[in-house]
Image (cartoon, rainbow, N blue to C red; front, side, top):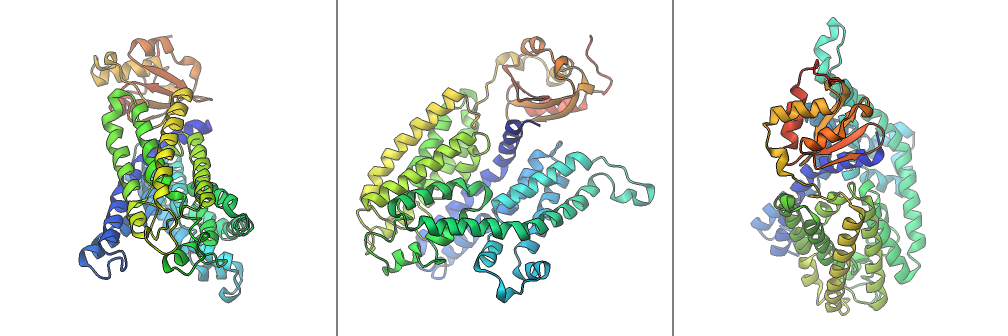
Length: 486
């Protein structure tokens, strides 16, 4: 399958778990605002909000494992979601447990390097969840109809998928035990080298911090710059006032203009670039994500919304983040966060001893809001990037009943036997054809298709309108004997 087409499918599958994240971010932010010193220790209401929010945000890997597996499965079956979660739990128990790692590698726990110990704790992340979701969905699509010998018949079909996923997860876990600490340690060493570069180093850290989020390795750099791996400990020293005025805070301040201003502006750009008929659908998701980012600094709902469907935008975002950290560090405009770079932390850190001209971060943020909006809108429109809501609806596609349209689309695509895979997102059919030459583009257009996107190989997307999922389901129900008249 064409890599771009597959990334588009992953982007679609991510929308379900992404829609959950703003709720967790808002609960954490509100709980922190009620009890900023105790994080719930001093307030029953704050306790409920903080731990309710943590239930979502600390388990993103679970959400993505189940959500991605469900979204990528051919028929969105729950067996795929269960298999994704099962695979993640195995990885979590093997790679996330230093005692298990010790048994596998033969290295006593007390002789493990610090990188190995820290890497183990960061092994289970949103990336791991997405990875296991993809693995589970791939195995589901391959084996959900498998027939086993009569004696093993109970374990055939969909029941076979969790079994094969479990063994696959064991194999992946063993590989990660050896590979993950090496990669993690290399990034830590890179971070240590960058930490001597001053404001430039802050910019480099900001760039890689965002760039590594999709694979969960940003934690390695965080250990160097904002935590206590090499003594920088930017967060704790800033909030305790034990750091150096004009230095401590340089690895935090530049995130405020991005999280509270830039990314919400990017949401506005994506909303404005969405087709008019789709704005109501994407407006709710993007609006909630933007509010969450402003108040709490939780930006994953925004970033996961475009990192896979428009990777070039994510690279631009990482570059702009690096630029923001460089500017704030160079100008010595410092504020700090304990949770994330949102409004709550900004207000609470405003008058701390090591804060320096934090009000200038507001001006920088307004500038970055304009920059993000302009860059995102120009890039989306110029390169026709498929950010949320970039599909069209044509009234012509609504005239025939769904079943009749489904039959007509099947015929125009070469018959039921030519359809190797049928899937749908909000307004488009996502198809894999056995022979793309049998597709009749003129007939598809006459039927009301607003666009036909060829993604390389035999992968095709047919934009049909908001009833795409209903049409796809009806196409699945068409008889196998239905063939094109040639």
